[in-house]
Length: 137
Image (cartoon, rainbow, N blue to C red; front, side, top):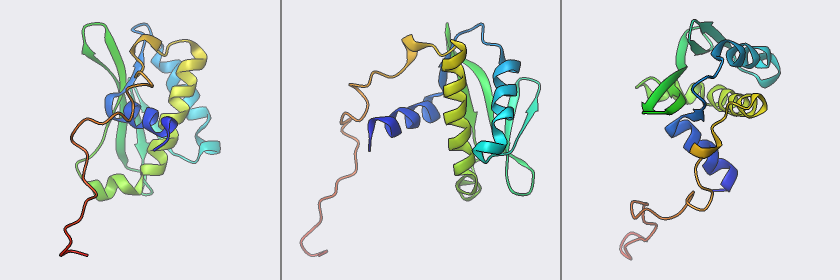
């Protein structure tokens, strides 16, 4: 997997690190303004950004959370229904990319909390093995 993909996988898994003083209304409005060009449908509900499925239902939301003291993240909350999530994966990816770009543009992306590129993709010891038993082949 390329470094870019690993970076966005980390942002999706752990949330987008942002400054505490982020103006959610501005960020969400800018994400909404780019929705037609980027191919996703969203709805803004107070401090939540909902990503809509083909039927117009909210399937995933983006919310500001404080993971630990002083560690603010825009985190995706997804359904337990993996099939439903796969249906909107392209939209989630587009919202992720656009949101990171907007946060960087506005200067609210917390660069101190971004993942270390040197650590992305390093083995954790939990990777799946691609070795096969000779009887299997």
